[in-house]
Amino acid sequence: PINLGNNVTITLVNGSVVQEIHQVFNPWLSQVIRLYKNSENVELKWIVGPIPVQDEVGKEIITRFDTDLNTSPIFFTDSNGREVLKRKINFRPTWKLNVTEPVSGNYYPVNSRIYVQDTKRRVQFTVLNDRSQGGSSIKNGSIELMVHRRLLHDDAFGVGEALNESAFGQGLVVAGSHFLSFGNISSAASKHRPLAQQLYMQPQISFAPYTGTEAEYFKSYKVVSPGLRTVLPPNVHLLTLEPWKKGTVLIRLEHIYEYDEDSVLSKPVDVSLKNLFTELNVVSLAETTLSANQFLKDARRLCWKIDGAKDVCGNSTTQGQQKLSAVNDDLTVRLGPMEIRTFIAQVTN
Image 1 (cartoon, rainbow, N blue to C red):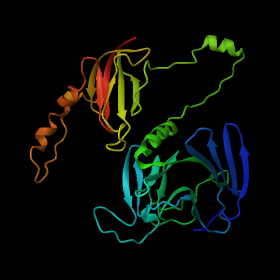
Image 2 (image 1 turned 135 degrees about the vertical axis):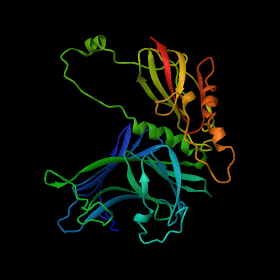
Image 3 (image 1 turned 60 degrees about the vertical axis):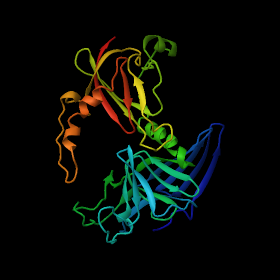
Image 4 (image 1 turned 90 degrees about the vertical axis):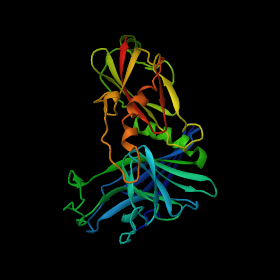
């Protein structure tokens, strides 16, 4: 790899709310490092492109964070923004790997986060991204993510064309962000889980012309809608609230922590839907399958017979009835770690 950090123009900006370091590596690569007041996270905003190829050499641009943590050869990446999978350099759990691509063979999809742990010092370093990227921990104590690339030759892996995207006659320009979090392993999830939710569900800002005054606008339009009467538990996310058939809405709740990820937040949690919403009163609940195309009591999963296992099919047929009984008279729903439950709710306004 070629290190682009040897000749960097740096500008420092000190403010009462945020401190910034502006880094310009070259005309097509720059970055702003931000630390907000009272924040536990560091934000990095980067801009890459158009990547020059006048030298007829394709380029893959990565950002790498090096630490003094002793982490090799283990690192962790998320799976679709939810569960986290353990990764090991030059290893596959189900077959013996013949390492022919020591870099690309150790890259994995990173949808929302990647982290490394120093188990002796009990320290975790987490990087959260705002888009899906490839990432790895090739070096001990480091994390790297590929932010952009522009190649001139096909890699012979089936695409049949070079990854050389362009716009307006030149290579694409890409802008994005990374967030860094350091902390104790035991409390790391309580920091990166809510932060990942915030990054994924940032408010969408829109603008429209208006000729009146600010006071007139606030009087004419509803600008604040809390939605909920009470705050949800910190380990629960309202995944879906969607109008359904007349008098009903579709509700999905998810537990955003994994089993044994946090000593408190990984525990099962109860959520009452009876008086949760400000403009809806939930009268009754009917649980459905995850996709809401069947009531759970009617669902019959395909049962795969497993050699050496007993009563697998018998246990699976009663799962729906057991789940249904977990909703009691006061419309309280219990969620286990990583569990998503879907309901059709009868409501009144």
